[in-house]
Length: 424
Ligand SMILES: NC(=O)c1ccc[n+]([C@@H]2O[C@H](COP(=O)([O-])OP(=O)(O)OC[C@H]3O[C@@H](n4cnc5c(N)ncnc54)[C@H](O)[C@@H]3O)[C@@H](O)[C@H]2O)c1
Ligand SMILES: [Zn+2]
Image 1 (cartoon, rainbow, N blue to C red):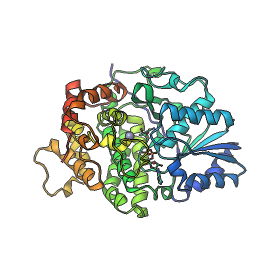
Image 2 (cartoon, rainbow, N blue to C red):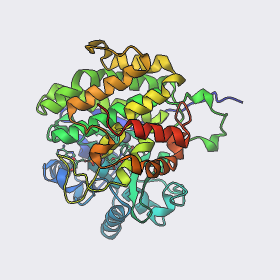
Image 3 (cartoon, helix red, strand yellow):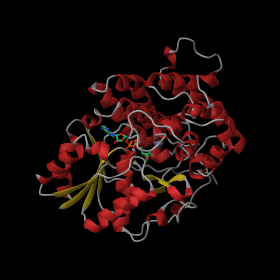
Image 4 (cartoon, rainbow, N blue to C red):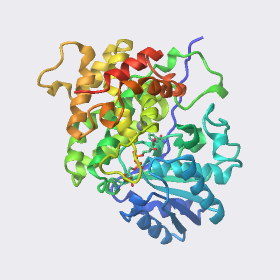
């Protein structure tokens, strides 16, 4: 029996320059008196979180800032944030000011100060216990300062589980923020390297949800079996398409000139739109491949990020195999791949490839080169000898691979990684 139902969920949204000045008013309407603001040290240095906290006091709210969220959080860093919140609570609400790292940390803090148990009880099985929260969470206002993850609209919280060397997540509708406050002014200070990685994340969210396996191609689910990621559907498609149009116009410019408020505004909208799309449709092969690329990092240190430890930032790790992944998925829906390339400006290519299968990969590699993404997985430290290990890691992301329009076997993933060693 084929599926006939799809779902759509999204937080309340406030968008625009100055939107982050009004959070105190919005929370006071909910009777909130005591708030924990969650951020990371880099974002704290911009002064945005402190300013958001101070503005809340004008509405009779006591606000404290926790500024030790880790960039690309781990189970350890999330436990530290949870311990701080448990010791210094109770809190009526949480406000996350930062990128995906701060927002995801706040989701974990919210979950574990309202529900019993340990972080690992809730992490997706088989890595963790896969439990669902039994108690409602507190209001969480997410204020993104990067233009990327869309975490402000999703039900997902991503973390590195250190002793298992695997990146995974917690996924449940109750994790979705109550309200997303997207204030493009807060994104102006993103370094160019962060803007480039985050922009590639937006692009892959839009492309992967636009090309995802359609919702009606699955078996009919019972109500209790429904998952937030339900496959491509007309509503998610609309958000993904619009996100691609905005990226085509403003991505390169936002990296070139971070002070360009129009480009920054477009990128903030694109991130939000893509979040509303992929947050319901899902993502697939590039994101599944990204987990081992980021999780098994050796000694790569990207520009614009803290350099204390090696890392391959999320958006970069997603982008590196995207051209080859979309060459592989092409045959599942050629018209969608061609249309995506057109939305991203394929018409401006000087020498378009003759095979339509190569069109989207070409558009992607030209964009990656222009915004300064490394030239393939070799440039971040992986060679042919690592491919089996990377495939192993990607195959563990079954929740994501289930959304792929064409199911990849181990040898297909190996071919995708091999094609991604060097991109141009
Ligand atoms: N929950 C989801 O739905 C979801 C989706 C995709 C990715 N993620 C996760 O989100 C994390 C990545 O988040 P991200 O890409 O938004 O970046 P991030 O939060 O890791 O921040 C990247 C860097 O930019 C700095 N920074 C952020 N905003 C800044 C600003 N306005 N000015 C100056 N510096 C700024 C931070 O201090 C940090 O050093 C990863 O852990 C990834 O796995 C989550
Ligand atoms: Zn992503």
